[in-house]
Image 1 (tube, protein in one colour):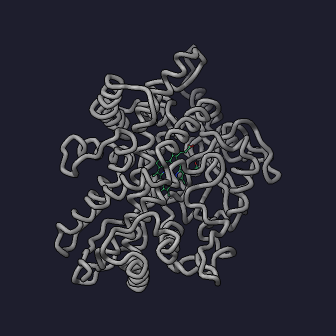
Image 2 (tube, rainbow, N blue to C red; image 1 turned 45 degrees about the vertical axis):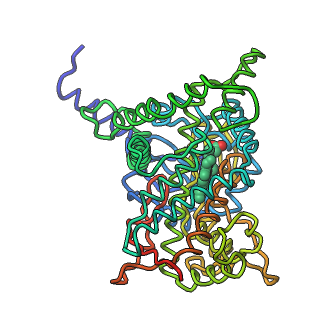
Length: 493
Ligand code: HEM
């Protein structure tokens, strides 16, 4: 039955008012937070592209556990080391899932490691960790591969002959090569066109996901004409990388497979697939998941470490005294005749403290990754429903003024005790905490050590001749990265 225009108007007003009234009411029991929420938008209109300043303000106003709506999605933000630890460690059974995410659903088809939950995730994480350990994660075997890659990186830095350069792309390529060595058993030349194009696609996807996360809250935007949120582009990029890199590599490994110790990640994963095929047990260890895990390792392991290396350069340019102290220490312990190795690590305390301070101040992954809940939970006296998205706001642990003296100052000394030994304060959690803690932490720490020790051994890093220092304000997407900057690598005598 068609309604009269006036009745139609009245019904519309009634429905809208009802929606408005409902949306302004936060159901009882939820963590406090800003209100009222707008229909459809939730609190998105209150947030800038970088939500951190607003979150800091809301933490002051509402406490360490607050909530907001992004579109219709309830988001709970955890602040401060103690609250984050209480959720992710003490209540790990509940807080260790990933929430449903439209982008993850479309891009990763809920396969792989980083975006999965429950038994699927446990199996992928266990097998991936076992393989990485077998390959020597955090030990010398892998260190030698990284050391070899560092020599190429140093050569590339040398090729600038002290002229100002933006090192973003080459750093990214070099760090990707470490993942390539682990996963495929081979590195690529920096000017290899296929490798360059594939990295560009992965990079573009990280940017697309970072800039268009809003589509997670409004999936219907996908049906707007055109590709406003670049979802089609992201899917095309994923298909390209999988078809040009992952599938051919897997096929080559399958064709030449022979049993035995892990030659590389794909080889060992295929071995695990075959073991399970023989036993007939139900499993998620299969080729489809392998393709997605390869993507996970590249995505999680490249941008993060490369960004941390670039932040180290930013802080070196701002703090030449820190750079010189690292150099003096390397001179004393290693000298100039040989490359720094992992065996030097225990003696390079100041360098290690500097790396920790870079990770603390740069805060490369300020919100960790989104966490989801395995069931409704009562936390800090609030009732949080299962479908909430949980954001551990790691910055609040890494820069809490109650835990860190002058948290905005860059001071490696804060990580060195009175006895000259390295300290590891509890709230130092740049790699997250709990069951979902970064899988690649030992690799990342090894890479940062070997790259930075060798870089400092070879060069003094200076700003361009006009003295232009890089900004300390970064760009927030999935990671927190430095704004583009130029640096001169001047060979040390
Ligand atoms: C997860 C930080 C390097 C692989 C994470 C998380 C953080 C993080 C904060 C999320 C933890 C959570 O969900 O609560 C970093 C930083 C890095 C780095 C700061 C470098 C400086 C790497 C590398 C790899 C890697 C080199 C490569 C193997 C992963 C994986 C996950 C992860 C696979 C997901 C773990 C899971 O869901 O179970 N990382 N990461 N990361 N990282 Fe890293």
